[in-house]
Length: 407
Image (cartoon, rainbow, N blue to C red; front, side):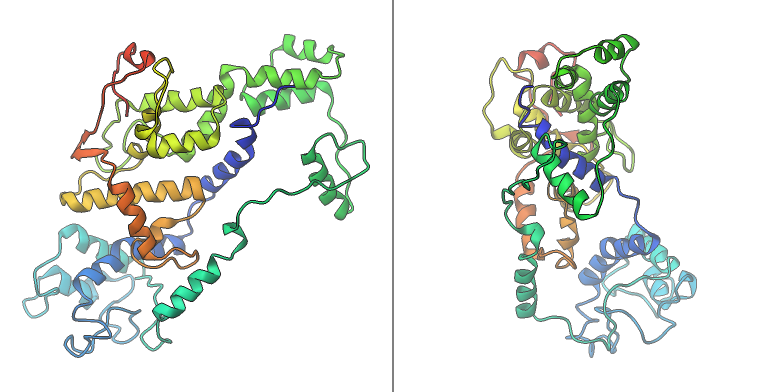
């Protein structure tokens, strides 16, 4: 059986990423916290803290908005925006109560605050009478402690357990059997040939074997019959379609931006075919990641089916909110979406949380977020609303297709 040490040995890692990306949706409480962090807290920081925070509370009438509100219950009535003084002030309908004094906020922002109050005004921040926020020194110490967590340590080679058991045919079997033995269990009996070929076919290509293929495998007496079956399935074009689909899910692939006006990505199919082709060509995982992030900087063979720049379609696809009228904020939001996708897909971490504050659970300070944002900002994928950066194709495969630009 030939060795499959690159993309195919990465199936376990890819499957893990798929599991991460396909976890059940957020609970209502988690959803409410995320809404506050993305829609409410940034507005409070930008428009309210200069008068209503610990350092300026005297100028703001002792009203503090830098912590969870626990005082005057008239200010925010959870579930009742119309009777909440905060919403009244934001709406600018009462000439005696208008905030911020510099001018009314955009209607979309006010609508976010109304929705927040309607959702019970969830606020994960400590209350005003809670212990003080950590100092910069304590935050730095906590970050250093966080970096010692096992998930952030370098990968180390592990020696398979030495077991005297005929069931063990590979190093993976040894690890599995050790855990089974420790739990007082034994492996399940060997599956019959008909079951084996069905399992292998569905797992590797997502299709059932034909009746003839089943009979051929059942009657194949060669000792390496199963290895030959696996090799044949791995060589099938359907293998790339089956496993490439998992990776496309992690890459949040779609033929449109999926938000606001759902504008199409007419050339996104290049990225789809590129991913499928990479799986079928057994392109190493680290090479594919490099092409996703910096394919426009990598050299390529002019005779190749796809040039590396097509891999950067990862940065262009996905949910992009394009109707944001503020051009600078639109770009900042676009970069935030790229960072979020990069962190979830390739690191298994929610880096985007650090856009507004140091990460609550992982050692990611806001400074690191904006350092990373600067790198992503240097790659231009959007010229203006609905106008994407495109470049002529150079490889023969792309030049011969009806669409001649990569995503």
